[in-house]
Amino acid sequence: MTMGSVLALAGAAIAATFAGIGSASGVRAGGQAAAGVTAEKPELFGRLLILQALPGTQGIYGFLTAVLIMVQIGVLGGSPLDLTIEQGLCFLAAGCPIGFVGWWSGIYQGQTAVAAIHMTAKDPEASARGITMTALVETYAILALLISILMIYGIRLS
Image (cartoon, rainbow, N blue to C red; front, side):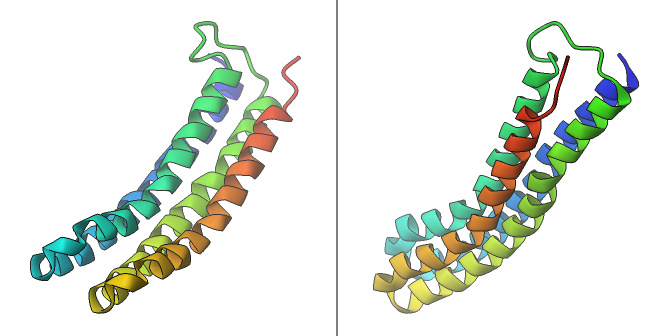
C-alpha cells in the first residue's frame, strides 16, 4: 500500500470517526433528557425518540463519506489503487468537511434537541416546532457532506 493510499484511508477515518463522535454525543445528550421526561410522561416517548435520534444523522453522513472514499480508492472493490501522495492528500482533505462539521453539528444538534425535549415536556404540541429547530442545525452537516462528496468525485485518479 502506498503512502497516498494510507492518507486516503486517513481521510475516510476522519470522516467516520469525528462525525460519529459528534452524533454519539448528541444522541447521548438527547437520550438523557428524554429518559428524564419519559419517566414522568411515558406517553411522550414517541415524540422524544424522534428528537433524540436527530443528532444521529451526522454519523451516518460521516460513514457514507468514508464508504465513498474507500470505493473510489478501490479498497471496497477488491483492487486498491496505488495513489500518489497528492491524491492521498486530496482524499484526506475530502474527509475533513463532514468529519469536523459533523462532529460539532452533532454536539450542537444534541444540545438543541435537549432544549426541544424540555419544551415538549411542558407543551407536547410544541414537539413539531422542536423538531424544526433541531433540524436547522443539521443544515450545516448536509452542506459539509455535499462538499465532501464533490471533493471526492473531483479527484483525478488517472
